[in-house]
Image (cartoon, rainbow, N blue to C red; front, side, top):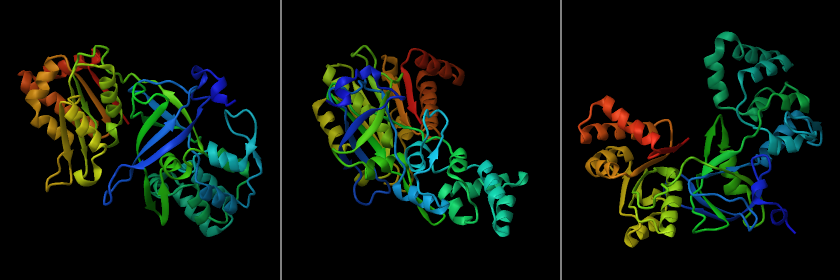
Length: 389
């Protein structure tokens, strides 16, 4: 009998992740896209953790075996050496620590100082000492931004650490959180994810997003287990199914709104649904286009406004579509609609928030201060919710 069949779903947590099985791995973007966005489906089985639309999934990834092997080789280690880690009860093998416990990216200036202290070659020691000097913060940060631990070992081959000394410099490998793109009402026992696979190159090396490529490249379909936990969220549909919902989710920010629309359709909610979606190009980046068109045809989605930034000379974003539809959006808000935003916190969410304040002021005939108060009340009433990262 499997562990999942003998353990209550409530027992699974961040400290005791559930071994989900990857059963689908499908490319969403079309040939020619600048992005690689995938639809991934995890099977939770009958005894897996439960979730609601709006929740997120935490995934514990494994590092790339080739990168682990290179670190071991450059340190002259076998990988069988025993090391101790903070918050890990028993010692583990060095290879296991590098594979599943520690982040191979993100060395700090303190790490440069330790490398400088260990360098046996005078030239290497001089370079490292210069980078770790008090006045070299900016240069050191620029240097480190393009390097992981394996780069430092490659560039400063005279440096030698014991396995324990090496792991003592490293940070924990943290789980990655992804918004769930499915409703349990429609897909019981499954979790759907919408993930951009991160791949780029710096300092002459190919780099990857640890978790995105773990799921995309290194977990075999229907065989390998993905350690996961459910992160329960404040991001929730209105309890009253008659309420309208406005959802702004460019790029992979569309994920929870796929779940929301599925959930609303399955529950028989009568409130209207309006989705704003944006990405680079319609021909290559319109995520779940067929599903949205079907929801429109079925009347379960009454409005779909898209913004494809690279399809015209001037860039158009979701906040621009909001401004173009300001009167209708204001009418929905005044009618009690809930307003949701998911996606990039640094720019998109701020721009959407600014557009919301502007249209509330303009359409409501309010001063900026009054508009700010109106939006603040929306948040207090849980009618303006954000899932941003």
